Image (cartoon, rainbow, N blue to C red; front, side):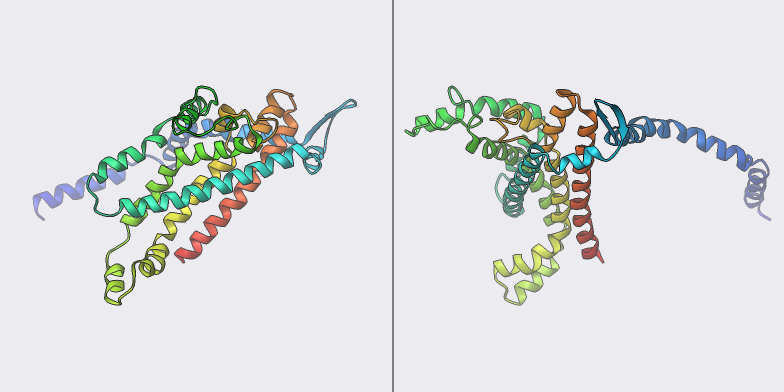
Length: 307
């Protein structure tokens, strides 16, 4: 036997001979995983159990008792139903605008344009800003007295007396949606652009040989191959839009009146201004269920596409 092979054989035997016991390995594995499990329990599992307990606990003049009263109360709460309607309207409008604008920008930036890298970087600037900063900046810009928006319109000769963007019930929701579209269309654009660049060139070459027009190629080649990226982008933005809070809170604080109150904002007021934590927890679980249902729909469509 060659000397090197004999040395390797002896090393392998010694490794097997001096291998630690399985019980020690298992104990070491548990010890290494323990900090992560502890953090997970402290930050996720315990708050979830506590929220469930709060939502099932109803306090009245006779004391507190276990019941589903907080959940049945939602059905007759006109403020909650209005906040739910505002949230769904906000999410539907913002998602539609962000998708079509992001798709158009992605298709445009996927072409060979001069200065394409610089334009891409400029398009991503709004997404890089913290939501709080973007909200404060736009609140100043939309100010009817000294804001940049009305100032620009006045410079163009337009009458801006009635354009109280965040104080008018008819304009407040549109203003909030516009700010969200401005900030998060780059996110949609980035995901769709990555999806476009991942599409192989062979289907386009086959479509060109078949004599397909640009619209036919886009409809029958680009969109089907881009579908997974579209679903991922819609899924991520839908989850964010359904739980929107900070942007609306900074721009309008849910006003004027109740015109822009979303579910997250209503939950915040119920919990921290009226100290009704049980009812706020019940609303949180309803919002969680709605988000999971919508997310499950996207995931099922995506899985069906992959299959």
